[in-house]
Every structure is written in structure tokens, then in C-alpha cells.
Length: 107
Image (tube, rainbow, N blue to C red):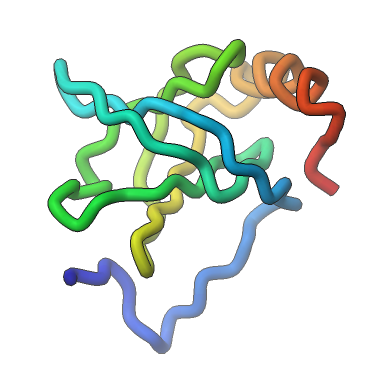
């Protein structure tokens, strides 16, 4: 398995996270890959990824009623990948819908 960070570089959350397992879809080009989340915040999302999928290629994620959100790659570790939301200010109101439905917000 390939890791895209070194052990010397610890992954530090950039914002409070809500640990939640939600179905989602990863988008790479014209291909869609159903998976689920590990956690989510206003700055990004951690998703489960299979060994054969290169998370550096993920362009967007669809998260329920929040819809499709454009993403960038941050890290990969132990079957998970960290993605950041591009255009966070535009993503925030859409994420508020999702968090409202869950009845929880990242704190």
C-alpha cells in the first residue's frame, strides 16, 4: 500500500470534525465510486478508499443533500483519504443543510 505522507509528518485536523459514517460518491473524471465518510468538517472530509483507488485524482465528492462539492487531496492513511473543499465559503451553506439534517455540527 502506498502512503502519500511520511511518519514524520503527522496529520493535524484543520477544523473541528464530526465523526460520522455517511454514504457518499467520489468523482474521478467521468467515473463515480460509492463509499462512505469517516468524518467531516467545514474545511473537508475524510473518506474510505480502496487500495486500487488513487485519492490524488479525486475531483469532487457528493454528500447527500449537500450535493457535489469540489475537492482537493490532502493525505492518505490506512484506507482513508483526507480531502479539502475548494471554495469553502460556497460549500458552507450546503454543509449546513447536511449538518442540520444530522442534528449535529462539528465542534
